[in-house]
Image 1: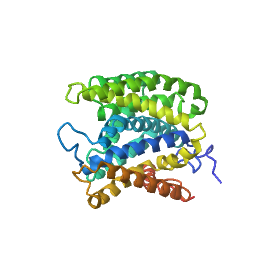
Image 2: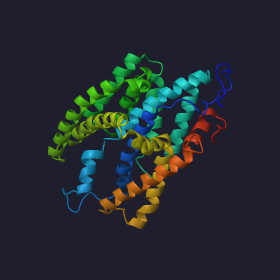
Image 3: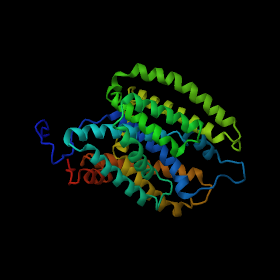
Length: 338
């Protein structure tokens, strides 16, 4: 059913065929990151209050600060760097101007993010597009060892000299690009021992950093840096744990939930904002302390998105937003219906 590409001419550029090999573990990991990001985004979108009195936190808020905040955004950023490299490789096989396709893709992503900012100030698509153009694109001309070293150095600096957040994006982008170039994503099935070794180091380091974060007074000048470092270590531990769980008896159930979310990450990221904005007045979330209600809303949204994503992907190759971005990238209508 799939046309061959061995003799396809370099122009006009053609998008990948419907059965282009996906790395399912990355889709699941992306869906996992999306779940955590939603937990953080709901309070941001609705400007929820921090606590009834200065210095007092709601238990759910404390849980988010210690277990969710800064833990999932690094995973998503790292995966963006990987996806950038994989897309460039695929585009290079189908076009003689693959970087032009990347520029078009990033500009479209930035414009979409600018529109998204109207509903969700502080959203991620715009900075992703900007750093993609300023950091990732030039890095495609650099050798992999230099990209890897720069990514590691920038990531370390982002949590030691700065306080994490958006400044972690360039380093994580470059790390993702380098890791993809080294072929790690496509060799994940053969890296169980390596993943276990990484977890053996990352888990105790993340636990120690978490305790340090918990024991540090939020008013301490270094509190935000400690929290950022703890978040980065936890992100590594979370990601590796999930990748190992995908190989366990729980793997099938986890994949069934997380893969559809990850394959339609852009669509789900955008529609989650629309759902939160619509539900916030009904649930009286804005400027409130209804943290439990916010978490229930997140669960409902993720459940609906999982069901919708599974239904949609049974009929179409790409999610609605993914299809639009792909069409703009290739500047032609991309077949979508299965």
